[in-house]
Length: 65
Image (cartoon, rainbow, N blue to C red; front, side):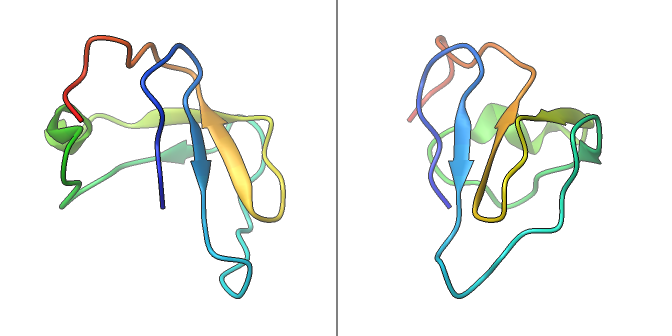
């Protein structure tokens, strides 16, 4: 997966690994390298979910990475 430093960061996965998220689902991250702020255990809301990508309802512009 990859994440960009911006508001509404987009998460992408490999085309062989489709996603089944829907808008407003909650996700929790662990073992993230770079943007370690995502490892805090807080659920993040999914938006604009698609089969291979989704956005988070969070501003990551000041996160590491």
